[in-house]
Image 1 (cartoon, rainbow, N blue to C red):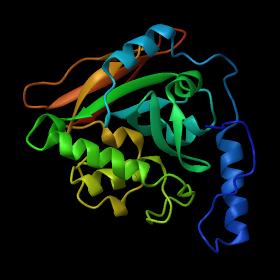
Image 2 (image 1 turned 90 degrees about the horizontal axis):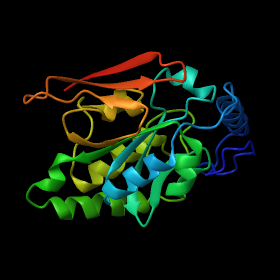
Image 3 (image 1 turned 90 degrees about the vertical axis):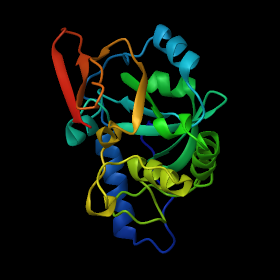
Length: 231
């Protein structure tokens, strides 16, 4: 996970030079730090998350210091799959790669750990293993800077959704994700249980019929930002 500016070299075969140029511009501007401060995740968050993390968990994080936060306009800017051994597989600027728990906690400002409800049902362990296996099988694939939804490259949510489809589980509430640009917040839905939130987030729960829930973020000035999601 190298968020310091460098040239992206991992692209699909025969990718045009002008698209490579555009991708590197996007990577450069998206990574500009607009809030020069330490990230907000704490050692207590690290300990708390590690206690509950299981293979196949989907993890939402927010990089709120960077310019990309303005483009995404949300408290969550990235999503990844936990594969065990203090490691995540995810799609970032250099493509699909494996990153350590420590690297993630040094980079991001908030975190939510989600567990798919199918994993607690019949054949759940089989689906969990298939989900992790499908994610790991994509390591090395380029990042999709065009958000085009092609299988030769992935942006973060598209990558997680592809691994889920390979495992026969559903993580999105709309039927045809190819007609949407997918955002990390799209994964906050009825298919998952929330098993961990970082210290600066508040989860106000889900009703028995999964009608509505909220993830709340407190910033340094104790201002409240609410992310609502319908289930």
